[in-house]
Length: 397
Image 1 (cartoon, rainbow, N blue to C red):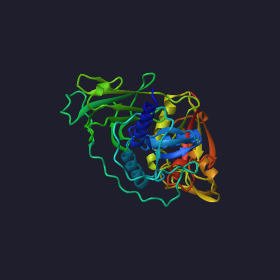
Image 2 (tube, rainbow, N blue to C red; image 1 turned 30 degrees about the vertical axis):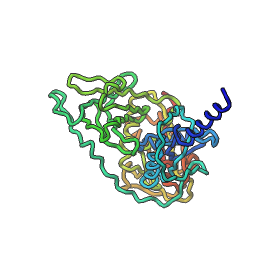
Image 3 (cartoon, one colour; image 1 turned 60 degrees about the vertical axis):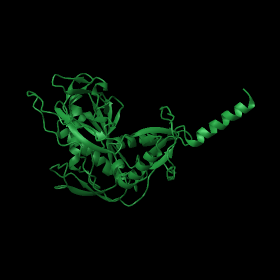
């Protein structure tokens, strides 16, 4: 190869790289952690909030980044970054220009994107990444219009004409035990629940607003690993194990794997009133799933870990009264205590609820962490949700 040829190739390579003919990855990052179990907990929180949270490792900084979008389209990444900063609790979201180690191949693009106004790329200086701000005012989110409320369909009668397509979602355990629960049709880019469908029923699912976007159906039952199925609405047969029954409905099976010894699961939907061991009413659904998990697995022994948002001293703690009103402050009592004692009382509340629902107390243990394992600092906008938490560890399966 002649010298002019080599020079020509070098010039072409420089032009290609400078004009953006090869993809530059952009990540919309919502958090970064050095400790992996904290990264896993934050990832679970974001997924529970209906975001498609993934992890990537920044090799130089030795941090695990949690991101909700990876794309070569800077405009798309910029728009999502702004939205999360302005409209959600993830106000410390930032736009990161790769690379991250995610195990995904880098794809070339075939044309240069239009020049965009540059958004500063902010690297986290502390770990975990937090922003101390005043509590934001919640702005009402518009209700999704694409999925009207579904009415149960009588299985003994022919199905009426569908607005979209009929589906039936079947959920079983690995050993074939059928579960009666619900699945969620979620928009994991926008972080919202589009519709909820009961299992073992025919449901009329309407076409997505964007026909090119697949359905993202999530099945999450406490005590089991979450399963997500991506369904091509135009051709559901491409979904693994999908079948079409005699009524023409698409049957989508979910097979859930039980938690095993050593697994730890966070009860993201169990919340307590401020400085109280009394739970909010919305906590009951997940708490009953825990009861059901213990009934279905009679050999399970668990440890209930109570975590608190700090180790504050001399706080006034609201406790359960004699009537044990788990989900309302009426009839409660108060006492002086500290953060660690509050985390202990909250773990005891979970234990008491299990016992009152027929679970032998000998199958449970409790441990109070106080604020020793906070996921974010107390001043963060997500501190109350992430630090005040209950974790369930499987001691015996």
